[in-house]
Image (tube, rainbow, N blue to C red):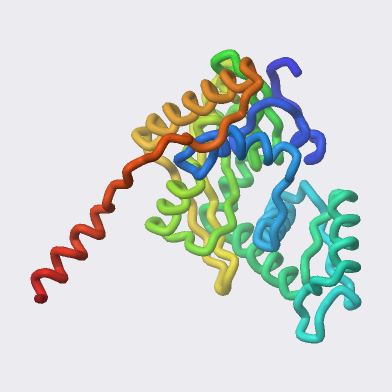
Length: 283
C-alpha cells in the first residue's frame, strides 16, 4: 500500500497487513522481552486474554468504533458468574472472535461501561477526544526502507494547535509514577514515536500534540492524561530505529533468530547491593 491515511479500515484487515507496526517494533526488541523469533511467532498466533478483551471493549465503548461486544450467555457461565472453561465455551468464544466480536462476562460489561463513562466525563480527556475527532485512523508509510503502519485511536485534522493525537490505555495504575512504569515496561514511548514518524512520513506534517489517556479498570475508575517529554521520545526513536534495522535484516536474510546463544555473566542489581549493605550494618 502506498503512503497515506485510510479512514474506516476494518480491524481484521489492518492487523493482517504485512507492514511493521508499533507492536511489531516492540516484539523485535530485547528491552521488551522480544526477539525476531517471538515476532515471527506472533504473526501466526494472535494474542488473546481476558484482560486484553476488557481493554479492547473499553476502547470500543469510548471511541464508538472497533470490535463489537457480546455478553457470555448463561450456559457459558459458572454458578458464580465466572466464564466457564469447558470446551463448548471455548468453541463459542472462537466463533465470536471470528465474527469480529469481543466476548465479555456480565461483570466485565459493568466494568467496561463504568470505565468508558469515566473517560467521557473527564474534564481533560473528554475535550482532547472532541478535538481529535477521527477514530482508529490507519496510516501507512516507509521509514528507513521499511514499510510501516500505525493506527491512531483518535486523531485530529489541522487545528489552531496543529495535529493532535491521543491513545487510550486501560491500566491498573494511572498515577504519574504508575504510568511511567507502564511506559517503560510496555514501550509506550516507542509506540508514540512510531506513530509520529509514520504520520510525518505519510503526510509531510508533524503530530504537534500526543497524549496518553489512562483509565484504571477498578472502581472508582480513575482517569489521567499523560504526555511524554522530548528526552524520552528521543530515546525511544533510537529503539524504534534499532527495531527497523533488525526487521530489515531479518527480511533480507530470511532468518528470525531467538535470544543470543552466548553465555552471559549477569550483573547484580543495585537494589541487591544496597540490601546487602543494610543487612551488614544491622549485624
